[in-house]
Image 1 (cartoon, rainbow, N blue to C red):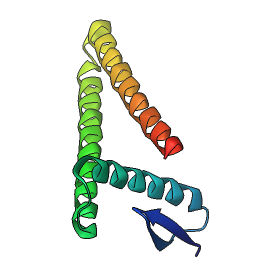
Image 2 (image 1 turned 180 degrees about the vertical axis):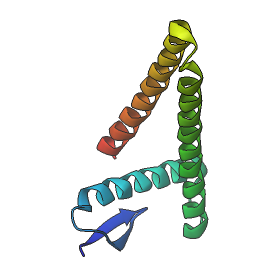
Image 3 (image 1 turned 30 degrees about the vertical axis):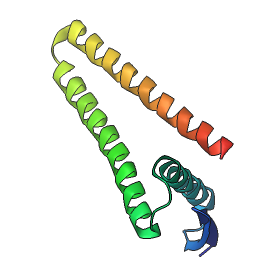
Length: 116
């Protein structure tokens, strides 16, 4: 089982992962490090444990938003199933809007990782 060194907020953590998951784990570590830097930049230095809890809450909030959007999409698609072309078109338009929003988020994250 490979072990990777991840730098989070200036400290190195050795984390084990499944074979073939190294790049994915590295990207996750970079994202976590980026969020830690953002937090430190906005509120200043705080204890490591408090910072990691706050970053975990920020990431959980992002996950909650995405989960809510996914639920909304599933509901819209389910409701549009038998209501004719108009309802289906509205649902597809909403899906397209949410996907565009998610794509902008992913692009922003990728850009932030590239500049960090």
